[in-house]
Length: 367
Image (cartoon, rainbow, N blue to C red):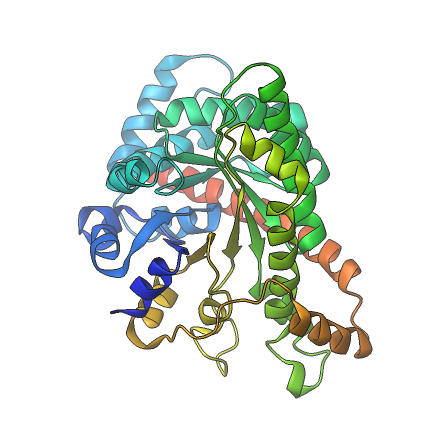
């Protein structure tokens, strides 16, 4: 049995953190589904920027969509952003259809693909809510998650979007406190649906970014602590997740038929070339969670990964490790806030780069 199938069998969903049109047309994604137990997919602006700018696979549609948008009229009808969303949704609909069987077999829990709202809206709750609803409607797939950042403004949008019945992938989370804030927004949305007599089943995942912790402190801690912070932070978050699932508040929601918001491990590609390329996949083996990973990491784990001990819900070892980092002068709460701020800025830059790529492509195809 392949390591990927072992993880799947223990109850963890393996998703691939990549999408390109060649992956779809050449059968690569279908191969991941059939051979490597992949049951979902995530995307982001950087992924699409590389995909669209890396060849001519999107050029024909760029020209078609640009021309159609020009004829539509209305404010922003021909914007680079609107052209991008048409390109992205074309890919994501096809990917969603590949995952349709697993979506049905899992009772709607698994088999999702994800599309992110414009990160430039991160501090605008109303605009985020509006765009999330529009994108999900345009996507026209029940297994399409809309990604909203778990910032203070984002959490308000998450609550409202969940109340409206939209499946949400909460992104840009870095520690247990940020995760719990997004879980609070999710539960409030579900509680409001129950009070309003609406279906309490609205799917959601909360994506916590792991490897960036180790990158951030790589030059600030002794050698024996390198590549250990992300795993320890994850251990604390997993403990918070399991405690929440055991809480009276969640049990009341479950009694109404609600489904838990699953914890998703993101940023699980190893950044340190001296560390194992399967480090974060092996460390975050845990039931009823999702691990989304770059395709190279997925392939590496399928080839030589090992499934050992599962994560400890009690987090005793994680807390001991975190004390060592605090002893080395790392302010964990301040670093979590900094990482979220830097992540938000990075998302903005990626978005601007992506729109620049779209604009350049439109110039070439128009010529």
